[in-house]
Length: 109
Length: 113
Figure 1: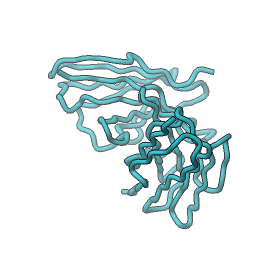
Figure 2: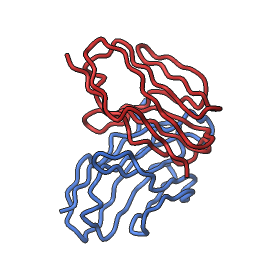
Figure 3: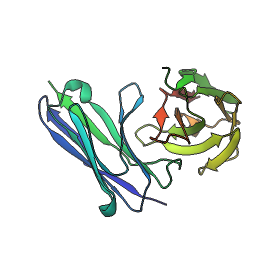
Figure 4: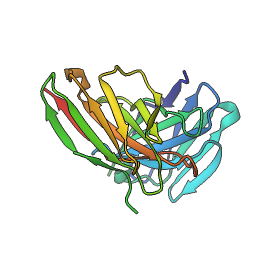
């Protein structure tokens, strides 16, 4: 099956700093999503981005499908950005999502 | 526009019992998937329902079963509960017509004692 690797596994930032999270995947995919899981367990969809670049406020994401990686950028981080960030991929647009192990982000005030 | 709703939010069961978890998909979505997330891990796919049939299944035993109703809502049933079934169970919905990926509910935290 498809392997998904996320890096770094843990990240500690001071409020206001910028960061880049990386997701590598081992095969072609038609679905790639970035999620933020808050401390209460809710998985919040940040981006649906099987290819290309998208921006939403302080967050942006880029997926280079031909090179099988995706990047999530967080600028001017806030304490509310803390939590675990997951990358998930699927072969088909309705295929089952395969998750990476996540990046745990802690933003200190 | 209601998102994905799951019930109950928390549940404590005894080993060997049976449990039913419920999910209502986001308005306009017709496909429901279930995931199990153990503590400190990423979610693992259990199965997916579309048109009231199981369409895909992950590597979970037959103790895990499900159902989808005509209004697209879904249930996850787990029989003969084991301590290892303790986890966060997440429901995700999507639309086969529109695409744009999956929307997740807040989950049901199941504790088996």
